[in-house]
Length: 408
Image 1 (spheres, rainbow, N blue to C red):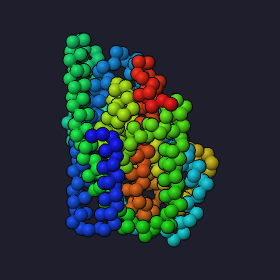
Image 2: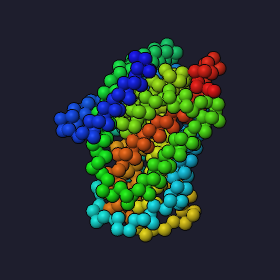
Image 3: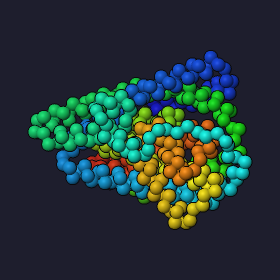
C-alpha cells in the first residue's frame, strides 16, 4: 500500500472514530473494544520475539566486543542525557507553575491500590528464573538479558557454528518484520477503534479536571517541550531533518499513542526506521530494543512532577538542593522501567510510600493516567527514534546515502 493511500485511510479512521465515539452507541463500542484488543494482541504477539531476535541477530553479527561496547556506550550516553534534560524541564515547569498551591479541598479520603513489591524487585527481574518464563510473563528486561548472554556465548563459538546461528536469528527476525507489515495493513481499522474508545472514555473522567489542570499542564507541558524542542534540536545538531524524521516515524508514533506500550510499538518502530529513514539494520535492531528498555523521557517527567506535587500537597517542603536531587532520582528510576504495567504510576507510589506520604491523591490522578500514558509513550518512542538516528549518523557506514538518513 502506498504511503499516501495509507495516510488517507488513517485520516478516515480517525474521523469515523471521532463520530462513533461521540455517538457512544453500545454495540459500536463493543466492536471497537474487540477490534482494539485484537490489534494489541497481534502487536504483543510479535513484540517479545522481535526484541529477542533483533538483539541476538545484531550482536551475533558483530565482529568484536569493542564494536558492541562502542554502540552501547553511544546509546546510554544519549539516553541518560535526554532523560536528565526531560526531568530538568519538568522541574522548571513545576517550580514556575507551582500546581501544589491550588490543592485546597482536593485531597480525597479514599486511597488508591498499590502494587506489591518494591523497585528492587523490578530490578531483580532483569535475571529471570527460567528462559520460557521471561516470555510468558512479558518480562522485557529479562528477555534482553537472555538475548545478551546468549549472544555473548555465540560470539565465542567456532566460526561455522557462529555463522549458522547468526543466519538463523537474522532470518527469523526478517520474517517477524515481514509479519509486522501484514499487521500494520489493518492499522486504519485499529485507529478507528482506538479513537472511538478514547472519545467515549474522555467524558467519564473530568469531575476533577479543573482542580488538576495545573498539575496536568506540568506533566504534559514537559513532554511537549521535550518532544517538540529538545529532541528536534538534537537532530539538528547532528545535521538531520526533524520534520523528515517525524514523518518517517509517524506510523510508529501513532501506534505508540494508542497502544500505550513501547514494547508493542517496537516492531513498527524498527520497520519505520529501516524502511522510511534507511537506518542501518545493524544499528536499528540493536538501538531500538535497548532504548525500549532504558530510554524513558516521559516517565522521568511524570515521576518527578507527581512525587513533588503529591508530597507538597500534604505539607512537605523541598530545598533547592532537594529539587536538584530529584532530577537524578527520577532519571534513574525511569531507566529500566520497561515491561512493568503502569510502571511510572507504581514507581511514583513507591517513592511516596517511602516518604510516608498518603496515596489518596494518586486516586485523583489515576483516571487521567491513561491520557498521560499515551503522551508519555509517544514521547518515549520519538526519543528512541531520535537516539537511533543520532547513533546511525555517528556510526553508520559512509556508504549509506545521506539522503536516506533524512539529512538536510
